[in-house]
Image (cartoon, rainbow, N blue to C red):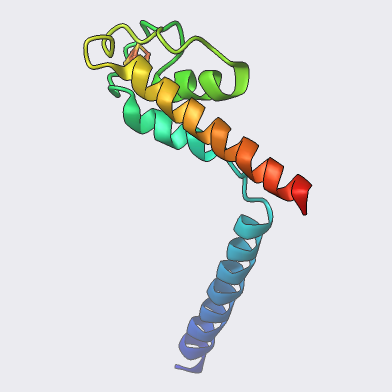
Length: 107
Ligand code: SF4
C-alpha cells in the first residue's frame, strides 16, 4: 500500500515540477510576433488555396509584413476588398509606429 502512495506522490511532485519548468520555458522562449500579421490573417479569406503564390494565408500575411509583398495577390479576396483592408492595416500600424517614434524622440 505504501508503494502505491509513494508512487502517486512522486509522480505528482514530478508532474508539478515539470509543469512549472515548461511554463517558465514557454515564457522565456516566447516568440513575439508582429500583431499586424494576426490582423492580416483575420482579414484574408482563409481559403489557404495558394493562389497568391504562398503556402497559405498565414504565409502570405508573414510575407506582407516581413518581406513587403504586394497587397493584391489574394485572388479569392479581390471581390471582398481584401487588398484595401490589408493596406489599411499596414498604413494604420505604420502611422501608429511613426507617431510613437516621434513621441519617444520628443521626450
Ligand atoms: S490567395 Fe488568398 S485565400 Fe488563397 S492562400 Fe493566398 S491569401 Fe489565402
